[in-house]
Image (spheres, rainbow, N blue to C red):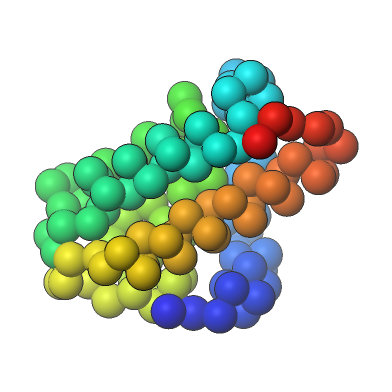
Length: 125
């Protein structure tokens, strides 16, 4: 797995990845439900949609909006197995380990927390 500092530096250089921001209903949802709840949902999404060695609809299984975790997944390259291989150096073709799932959630947590800081708001944990 890729060093997190290296990952976020690379994501920051990507015009596509760096354009994602939380706003509107996704930002409101994070504020209302809190980071812990959003991360529980994210863990469920990752486990159900990405953890298999060959997930169904890979490359199309993560929506672009309607939940803060979905926006975070696209911003961090954790949206499909191809992006996990490219950005996080988690190879395709094998089921995700618990360690890899935990790392993906840490990546999402960092991005969501940085969004919170950039927006200058305080959200429930």
